[in-house]
Amino acid sequence: MLALRFANEPSIGLAAEIISAGLVEHSAEHLQSAAAFVLASGKGSAQLSATAENLLRGQFAANEDQPEFPSLHSDKNRFRSAVAIARARTRSSHVSPLAWLDLAFLENLQGDFKAAERNVAVALRYGPESRLIRRAAAQFFVHKGDPGKAVHVLEKASQVKTDPWLLAAHIAVESEFREPRLLSYAIKRLRTEKYRPLDVSELFAAIATQEFVSGAKKRLVKSAKASLVQPTENALAQLTWIEAVTKFNLVDPALVDSAADAHEARARKLFANHEWALCCDATWCWLADQPFSERAASLGSFVCLTFMDDPSQAINFTLSGLRANPSSFMLLNNKAVAHLTLGEIDNAEATLQKSPGPRTSGDEIVANATLGMLLFRRGNYSGGRQYYEKSIQLAEKRQDYHAMALNRLFLGREELRIGEHENVLRVFDQIGNTLTKIDSETATALSLCVEQIRAIHPGVDRPGKMIF
Image 1 (cartoon, rainbow, N blue to C red):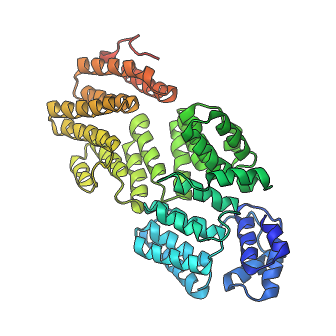
Image 2 (cartoon, rainbow, N blue to C red; image 1 turned 90 degrees about the vertical axis):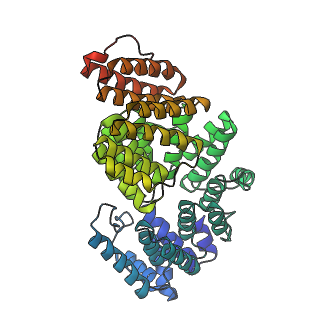
Image 3 (cartoon, helix red, strand yellow; image 1 turned 30 degrees about the horizontal axis):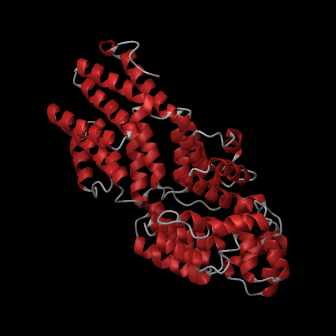
């Protein structure tokens, strides 16, 4: 699509899109002609012209690794250095939207959200028709908690209805707070227009997500199949999530294994397979690729606390996520639980004081369970049991059997820690009665946790009580 438009009406903007897409998608197709046009026109920015010149000289290939940003574990000096370099690039290539976007990305990671938003606006001013800039800016506002502004940014692009990448982003973002208005239009367009499979992978995945929400199973499976002909990592992640919820066989594991950048999809697959250490490895890769992802840090810390008995790594996950999400209820909660597991009660209380508090009924369930654990660690066992039971009752009221089983597991661990084996037996039996009401993957994982405890602690060994 881009190549056809460029062939008919060549422009600097389209040439920049082709070069950016070629480098990101590891495809050399049409790069040479776009680079030649940039140099011949003499209208490209300093950065774009330098990139075009290097391409024509063959100084780097289309699949060359992109410059690395410092990870959230980098020392402060390295991070400051990266910000200084990015800021210098905006001075030397002051009209390059990518330079301003890179600076905004780093500022977002270090928690300077106002500066990041200012520089996202500059990037949009210098790259108003750039698909890459529009999508990145929309992602920034979604992360900021303003999906309405993200939709506005996407709708400002003149090609929002013709570019499947922008159309996919529009549907995905708008569905976070209302019915996506362009969904029917997108479905009709896919019937009448021809695109490369890669270009429509995320659009089909966005449509599949809406079909999942509406319960249209047959259409969901059909859309997922179309999305996976040549999938992007985002499409793989989304469809892997849908697969985990619906239990439909949508994603061939070989697709996930062969995709170099499918870190989220790989982490979710490994979670489903109960390969906890490998799941954490994949989640760290996911965080390195998307350092602002609260979901990645939440998943990693949850796995470490629930299935791996690794509170120190859980703290590292939460610290990584909190840098870009300092007010995340779930990350602060998981960090507090990790401190409690390590016996660091004061650190746990200090962490909970930073929390914005529960915002949903699901958060309230979690908050009560964590208060129960805190009281257990303070020696107030009856108070701890009361808060755990309150959490379990709230979960039962919502028919959230997943939360009921998890909170009973943590309650059982606290009872075991203080030697109340009869209470442990009672709680474990209750978990067994709940497992039939939750998904098989989580049920199996929790069963393994309980059986592992029984094998290590003979005092709570009562064979045959678990319901598989």
